[in-house]
Image 1: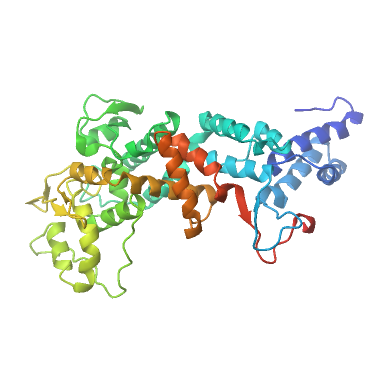
Image 2: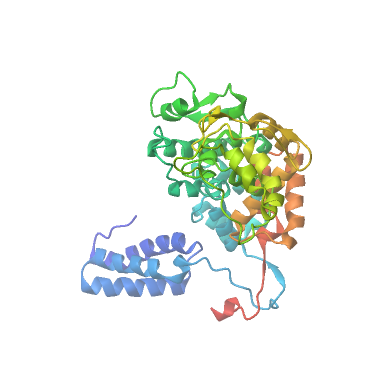
Amino acid sequence: MCRPVASGDEHACAKTIVTALARQAFRRPVTTADQESLLSLFQVGRNQGDFESGIRMGVQGILADPEFVFRFERTPAGVAPGSNYRIGDLELASRLSYFLWSSAPDEQLITLAGEGKLQDPAVLDGQVRRMLADGRAEALAKNFAGQWLFMRNLQDVQPDVYVYPDFDMNLLQSMRRETEMFFYSFRREDRNVAEMLTANDTFVDERLARHYGIPDISGTRFRRVTLTDPNRFGLLGKGSILTVTSFANRTAPTVRGKWIMDNLLGAPPPNPPADVPPLKENGEGAKPLPVRARLEQHRTNPACAACHKMMDPIGLALENFDAVGAWRIHDSGFPIDSSGQLVDGTKVSSPVSLRQALESHSDAFLQTFTERLLTYALGRGVEYYDMPAVRAICREAAGEGNRFSGFILGIVKSTPFQMRRAEEGEGTDADH
């Protein structure tokens, strides 16, 4: 960046270095006060050693500065507590960058924000599309999909190797990568988000292909494949999701049903009563029973029946997938009965029929996707007063064919993303 040739060049060179670093670290143009503070630290370090010692001291000052550690969104002077106001361009740039890249804004974004140009809808639209086209947007697949689809929970999954001897950590990592690449393809190709339920393509390496029974795949490189088994289509056929919604030694239809109701349909069932006993497990020496039979025993408890009536038919439709997402036709030696009836009267008996039932509620899926994505973008839960914005985002995205970019642009332009409420007792910019 800059290296002094003579001692007289050191101050100017140090100023260039710390200013450039602070601009990126503070996510805004650097003020004269910032420069003076950092150059004072440089001089302290320089007095104790050489030029590099001074720069090291300046960098330490940047890393310890609250402006780097925290993302401040200061309330402007004159804004009354409890009122809403539009955040500044620099705050908007940071919100946008951490939403799409999980990282600080780059030089182009900081420059436009410093010039006040992000208020121009055309400029903002262009920046969102530029950032989505950047490889750094893969952070959405890792972080948002990790949060929404419970991929983060995979690190805690430990299937019983005596029950599932074919399972290992390589398979688990392949499952995770498949789901990330599947989600990322919707961002990269700007696909219709509703197709996450129905897509007949996925990404596999040899390890995962063997687990799924897909032939002619060799090596560790992931490649896109067209699925021939309709049971594997969309999110419902992903081994990662089927594994993270199971127990170590068996499937969990209730957990799978609850997961789908909550994360795909936005209709979570109520929490169980505190005194409800757990599902009875197969005991040693006793005749083993399939999960379905044990669930039927469990539902004889009136306190359990109402909620299980909603969740169990959904989860049982996936019962042909074992606890690590492999296809099977028997459970504990009994043929699997995956039939059931949803609360709206729809009969389901397989992943295919369940997927078709979910397709008929694609509006609920798209709204739930929007709520989860908005939660991720804001870093807070979606509240009742955010719902008009959620519905508006869904309507606008529908006009664009429900493409991934439509949801992203809708969120970035929404009131919750661009506005903030001044809280009681919050200091203004003049107080900091």
